[in-house]
Length: 457
Image 1 (cartoon, one colour):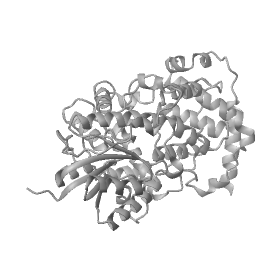
Image 2 (tube, helix red, strand yellow; image 1 turned 90 degrees about the horizontal axis):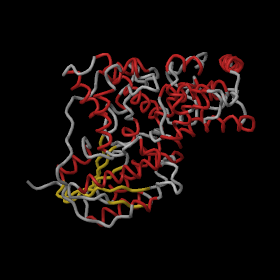
Image 3 (cartoon, helix red, strand yellow; image 1 turned 135 degrees about the horizontal axis):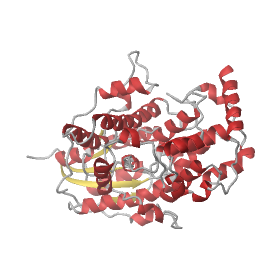
Image 4 (spheres, one colour; image 1 turned 180 degrees about the vertical axis):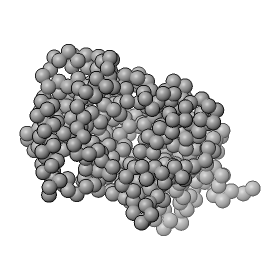
């Protein structure tokens, strides 16, 4: 049977996998040959270009993807430059008649994709885009009145009603392709010149194989008891799938299928499985919010907080630096920040505690913390990062009440009662070597006064 296209470019971005990749599946079904391409465009993400830790992960993930493609007879063609110039040039070189890709949902990417599609179509090149990253795209869910959701529980109820089925597309066994010249991966400059990231890779295996292994490990050793264990930072009861999801090395449909299969086989308690899926629902909620409120990476969703009386940068510079370095003198906060330095990642419970300490005890703007996490986290994701920081700061959707101020000492007693997490990452902090940079009781009251002042406006 004759194919619709003689050649299709599959434009990879943050969908760096072959399994359950709808753009790749559609290209193979409709084209005689398929050319996988990656365009390194420094301006594609606007003001939110990937941070240092994300770039290091991306290097390894692209290398892994190329290895998977080579095992199927293809190569990843890498090019540098402006996408709207590079893609048409690749189309011409390959003799392609179409470009397929999977959609991204950050504001800069949405605008860029629209521009790319128009550019290609004006030249007679067909385009098609697909959903590979979410269970339900942000534009498809809304309240009964047609407005975006701003509270998680009704959002989750609506999302649960439209979750995809258990079938996912397998990775292709062979990819018919044609060879094109490629820039070297090292030429992209993704890896740091000084190897501060070398310790990361003792904890992580970027790429599709690493993602699938991580999911299986979680299924075997972490999912049972997840509901209770997930808040204990010294415990292995979490998935650690977030960087793999961000880079699309595994898709949420794959995870859902595996979890549903485990439930059907009575491998895990239903309460644990459902609680884990609900956590993935927060990821969907974050993308829903970013799509409908694109200003929120820098502006509070609640406009009242635009006038919040944060400290001035000249007054908090030393405290911010101490927080970034894990030198606040508060053991759980310092342990989390040092885990971040060492691994490019931090346990979610500790993220909340560290964020609360920065925004409420130190009264430093949440945007400072969000920017630091953006640069330091291997799972830095604009939607998740924005939702998390605005939730803790009390200025976003479904936000924590303004009077919820995590006490890091009480949090440590509750979730790290044996002190194992603190001893691992900040043993000196656990011995009280550094005097705390803030009096917890006094700064808590200062934060409450500031929030009360904002609410009166």
